[in-house]
Length: 257
Image 1 (cartoon, rainbow, N blue to C red):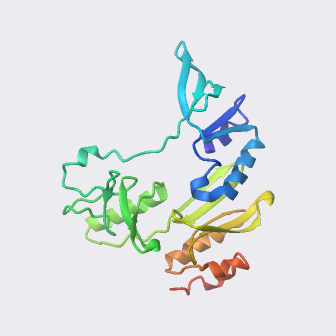
Image 2 (tube, rainbow, N blue to C red; image 1 turned 90 degrees about the vertical axis):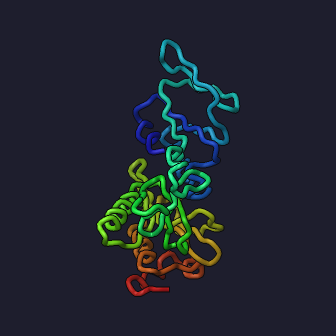
Image 3 (tube, one colour; image 1 turned 180 degrees about the vertical axis):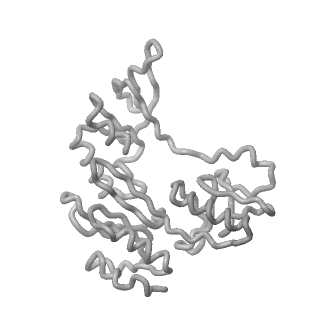
C-alpha cells in the first residue's frame, strides 16, 4: 500500500490486487480498511479484491499484462509483489533447535533457544510477549527485531534481561500517518472514536473486556501513550473507552493493573 501511494501520482495507472476485502483488513479491520481504500481511490488507485494473480504475460522480456484468478486482465509495465514471508529455517531441521510447525525458532524471554549458548532473534522467532500473558508470538517488524537483538546481546554478555517491548508500527500514506500499538490477532470488537471522513480517529481493538491494540490517525500521542501504559504493566478495559477515547490517560505512570 505504501508503494501504491508513492506511485499514485507518477504512474499512468496503479492497481492493487489482494485476496482480502479491504486494505489492512486483518490488522485494522473493515472500517479503517475501507477508509484506507477510499484514501487511495481518491488518488486514482484501483482495487481488485477477493482474487489473486494467475499469469504474467510478457513480450521481449517486458511485462505487458497480468491475468487475475477471476479472469480480469490488467495492462502492466511493472508488478511489485508482496506475497508474505516464511522463515528460511529448513537448514535447522536437524540442528536440535526447537522449531514450530511453521518453521519459527522458539526462544525464551532472553532470546535463548532450547540449545545451550544458542540465541535467535528477528523475524524467524516466536517469543513470549508479556502483553498477552507471555503467549509465544511472531512479529515481523524492525522495531521488535531491534529489541530482540539488544536482549540477545545482553544475554550473551552475561547481563540477561527479559524482552519487554510493546509492538508498535506506523504507515505513512499521502501525508497521513496511521500508528498502531499492541498485539491485535484474535480481537473480537473495535470501539471507534472520532470521524474517519475527517481524517481523525482512534480505534480500540478489544478481546473480551480488554483493549489489546490501539490505532489512530490525527490523534497523537494517544497510541504512544497506550504503548507506555502497556509497557508499565497497565491495561485498558473496554468499559473505559466506551464513553470517551482518552479517560484512561490519567493513569499513565501509576497503573499496574
